[in-house]
Image 1 (cartoon, one colour):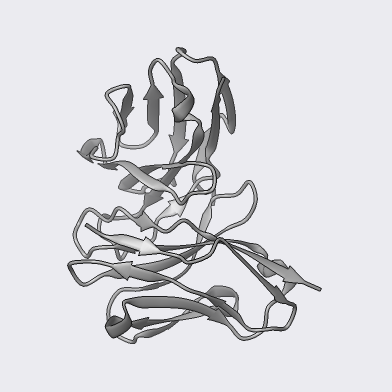
Image 2 (cartoon, each protein chain N blue to C red; image 1 turned 180 degrees about the horizontal axis):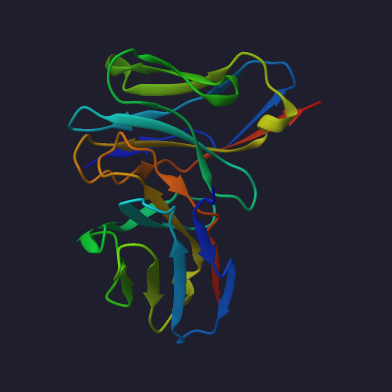
Length: 114
Length: 115
């Protein structure tokens, strides 16, 4: 079975500050890892994903994440927060099989202070 | 092009009523997923279709939940005899092909409230 842990439910940063959202996973097989963003009353949008290859992956809107197998982590970062980054962020894991259902964490709400 | 659409966006049902939630995936997408998102939680997998074949329904919480995709495009999630614990946002996602490397595109969801 796979699982995702996102510690804390809310992170608040100042505009221009570093954004760090933590994600740890558990998987018995090599995982595929994802970060999704959800704006109010909208569907989830893929920010970035790790499948194989380079462990540092870059996504949309200036976000990036690093897969660290030894730490079973896939933390999301952005060097400088914008007001428009305020949203809910979900980390998800899947196996590499044909049935690509996603297992999500509880999500983290990011607030950006002016 | 149009994304994944879901209807209705909001549904209020009295306990015991049956409801039907519709998902229109992106045209040509082979795979279709349903997820349930309770308040304050992440989405949880319900069921998966590849074309019209329902390949995984391991996440359906009870036999009151039923999903179909008869022609391999539009899908309907039906909940019979709704209970208060069914209150959640129901998300539909589609992807072009099968396999995890293919991005799942999510619809805006249907918010179901059972009173």
